[in-house]
Length: 266
Image (cartoon, rainbow, N blue to C red; front, side):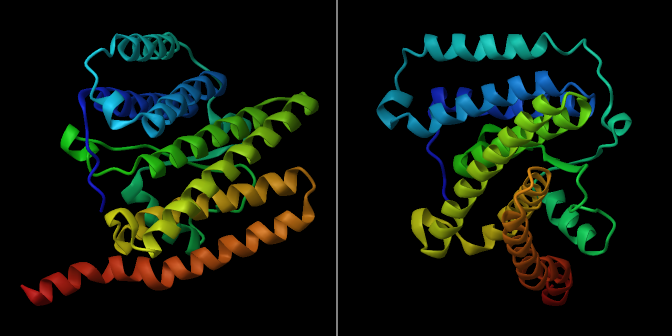
């Protein structure tokens, strides 16, 4: 696992990005899809700043611009807190909110048919759990960027499902597909780096990344179907099946039996 060097400036950016992601998830739960999309876009912009910021810039004490940027983004998001929308279930959307840990069990639930990831209006979004700055140091900004892009795509899908205007819905589905593809590319790069043993990554971290890959591929299958991209439906569905099979056989079962192994060793 890579340990991220955290200056005060990076801490602000990272903490704000995660907070905005989680605020957006609460907006999605309340049916506020446009505010959720705007808030997630702000979070994505902050994560882009993190990825492009050099250590010298990150350590710079002249960070008033960063403070103001974050304050403006948070203020805009807070302006939506008093609003109410049409909750997902009233638009036929089945919404499930997971974090990195519960995402593992969500894939297991999908295998047991308790969670229908393949259904068009079944949406999973990812909340990020961080208890302290110490926790931040062990997060991967690339993985978190992919989560935010994925959630933004989900917000676009939910908005498309809630609209009656076909042309706008089609544009939103197109945009969602583009975001899912970006998210998938980031995750694939992270996995390639892990397999190559780069940046101190441990292959055991895959158990927390593979569920996101599966969620992204299932949503790419949905968007391809909605857009009439039949070849892509087969491609993404096949990839999702392969990742699920690998995850269930190699990772999910290992997690299930880990407590038994620990008890036997005690």
